[in-house]
Image (tube, rainbow, N blue to C red):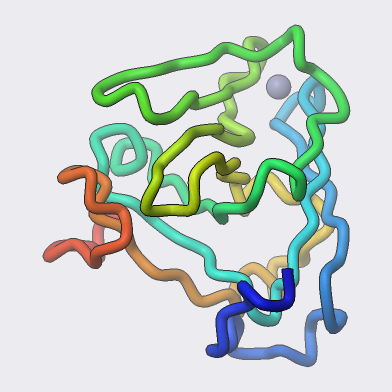
Length: 154
Ligand SMILES: [Zn+2]
């Protein structure tokens, strides 16, 4: 994991985060769906995407390896949505409609991945979330590793 660590800080205030990989806890709005995700938030990259789904949801996520993510409650209460190239499953709570995560496979992103929704992580303070830097992905053109031309609306 250390070898894949980005060099640039992912936060304007690294002092707000513990060093190294920490387990964070997330949930949907009603609490039926719960997850854990292992992140180093001093360095991990968060992301916004311009694809037709993410742009409407104004989704703010972080891409991790499947082994860094654990669904701990609500597996039977998920609505799974696929569209377009079907390279990803968007998983939302059937009760409150909040998307907690997605799963997918994109060769250029290193194969199988989970996208956890930063806004659903409950043990991050507003100040911590506010300090995180995010990049943008051109998912609209299936070029997730490129910056889109227009991004302020995402
Ligand atoms: Zn819910």
